[in-house]
Image 1 (cartoon, rainbow, N blue to C red):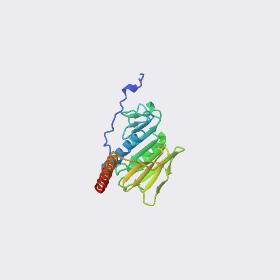
Image 2: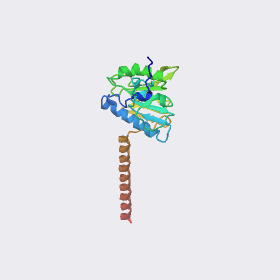
Image 3: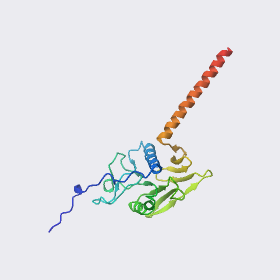
Image 4: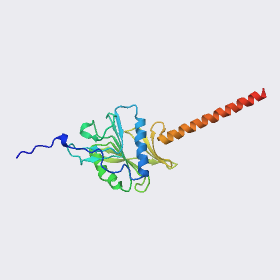
Length: 226
């Protein structure tokens, strides 16, 4: 009896693993922020792909060989949208991954995923614990050297802000009382969320109105003296 190999066209790679995007608001909000902020930062680059919570398949013909990074960045991959990320159809594995750790994921993030990402060749692997319950400190990074991950220095400044530098992205990862942010490694300029951008816009409009009112008042006083 001759066995006929299963055709690749018969293999189904689901778009979802059926698991929720995040365990709670504590994990969901930084996940959404990170994806949106990085997409805006690289918006002019058609050769950089940014996504989050997307299934990454790493073994052709085996739909069970999959992982869903919270946030991933691939330098050198087209920026178009995808249903899933199949390594054999793409130029390379992600260069950057960050996992938003929770009670349900902390063991996997520090164990199986860390080993898998090293095996796949992910250059930088970061972990962030938004509640501070599972990681000490709450921000940690690792750089792939000779197929093993080595810690990326994360320092605490005089104000208690945790800062690490991603060489892959050219960005700082910052954690302070205002939460988690990316920042330009050269200028220190924060990559703001949509809500923060809107708040800054409204504040600028208020400041402009107040300046216009002060100018109008000064002009009125000047006319009264004449």
